[in-house]
Length: 85
Image (cartoon, helix red, strand yellow):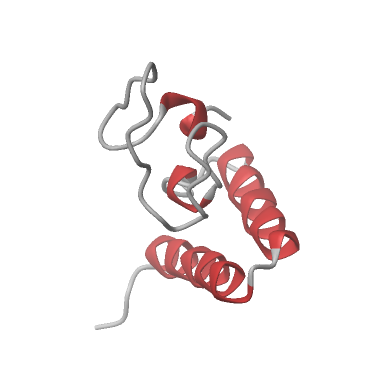
């Protein structure tokens, strides 16, 4: 049985983010985020995009985990600043 369309769409957006990370291409990240925002506006769950953003606190690359920085709390292994839309 094939994957549901919404799950296929989420996986496709993740693939774009992975390619952007691999090629260090911020325009691909921006395109994937724009697709996610459009999906949300159409009433679909685009899935989490925070993992694919660079962290403004610790400088973690898109797709990489945050690292502890003195004076900055982390929530679920990420700096909250990274997860804000």
